Length: 72
Image 1: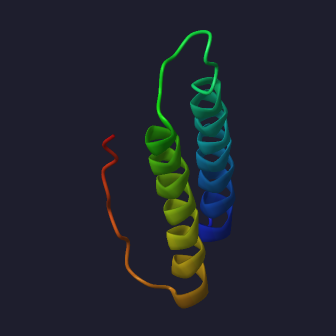
Image 2: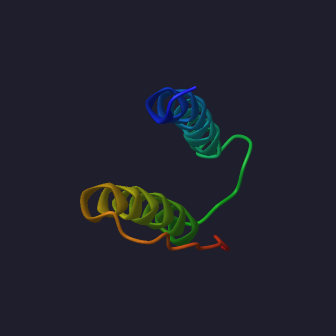
Protein backbone atom coordinates (compact mmCIF):
# COMPACT_ATOMS: atom_id res chain seq x y z
CA UNK A 1 0.00 0.00 0.00
CA UNK A 2 1.45 3.37 -1.01
CA UNK A 3 1.69 6.39 1.25
CA UNK A 4 -1.18 8.10 -0.62
CA UNK A 5 -3.42 5.07 -0.13
CA UNK A 6 -2.54 4.95 3.56
CA UNK A 7 -3.23 8.69 3.90
CA UNK A 8 -6.67 8.33 2.28
CA UNK A 9 -7.53 5.30 4.41
CA UNK A 10 -6.54 6.95 7.68
CA UNK A 11 -7.99 10.35 6.79
CA UNK A 12 -11.37 8.86 5.96
CA UNK A 13 -11.48 6.83 9.18
CA UNK A 14 -10.23 9.61 11.45
CA UNK A 15 -12.34 12.43 9.98
CA UNK A 16 -15.46 10.25 10.06
CA UNK A 17 -14.79 9.43 13.73
CA UNK A 18 -14.12 13.11 14.55
CA UNK A 19 -17.36 14.19 12.87
CA UNK A 20 -19.33 11.56 14.79
CA UNK A 21 -17.71 12.65 18.05
CA UNK A 22 -18.49 16.31 17.33
CA UNK A 23 -22.10 15.33 16.71
CA UNK A 24 -22.15 13.56 20.08
CA UNK A 25 -20.72 16.66 21.76
CA UNK A 26 -23.57 18.60 20.17
CA UNK A 27 -26.01 16.24 21.89
CA UNK A 28 -24.77 17.67 25.20
CA UNK A 29 -26.62 20.89 24.35
CA UNK A 30 -29.96 19.26 25.23
CA UNK A 31 -30.99 21.08 28.40
CA UNK A 32 -33.67 18.46 29.04
CA UNK A 33 -30.90 15.93 29.72
CA UNK A 34 -27.94 17.99 30.89
CA UNK A 35 -27.21 20.98 33.07
CA UNK A 36 -24.38 23.27 31.99
CA UNK A 37 -23.37 26.90 32.20
CA UNK A 38 -22.50 29.40 29.51
CA UNK A 39 -18.89 29.14 30.69
CA UNK A 40 -18.97 25.36 30.14
CA UNK A 41 -20.40 25.78 26.64
CA UNK A 42 -17.83 28.43 25.71
CA UNK A 43 -14.96 26.23 26.96
CA UNK A 44 -16.15 23.38 24.76
CA UNK A 45 -16.50 25.59 21.68
CA UNK A 46 -13.11 27.23 22.28
CA UNK A 47 -11.42 23.84 22.70
CA UNK A 48 -12.94 22.58 19.43
CA UNK A 49 -12.11 25.82 17.58
CA UNK A 50 -8.51 25.69 18.80
CA UNK A 51 -8.15 22.04 17.78
CA UNK A 52 -9.37 22.80 14.25
CA UNK A 53 -7.05 25.84 14.01
CA UNK A 54 -4.14 23.65 15.13
CA UNK A 55 -4.90 21.02 12.46
CA UNK A 56 -5.15 23.72 9.80
CA UNK A 57 -1.83 25.22 10.93
CA UNK A 58 -0.14 21.82 10.84
CA UNK A 59 -1.25 21.21 7.26
CA UNK A 60 -0.33 24.71 6.11
CA UNK A 61 3.02 24.95 7.88
CA UNK A 62 3.86 21.28 8.37
CA UNK A 63 4.40 22.15 12.03
CA UNK A 64 4.60 19.93 15.10
CA UNK A 65 1.62 18.59 16.99
CA UNK A 66 0.34 20.39 20.07
CA UNK A 67 -1.26 17.87 22.41
CA UNK A 68 -3.85 19.24 24.80
CA UNK A 69 -6.29 17.75 27.25
CA UNK A 70 -9.75 19.20 27.77
CA UNK A 71 -11.14 19.85 31.25
CA UNK A 72 -14.18 21.86 32.32
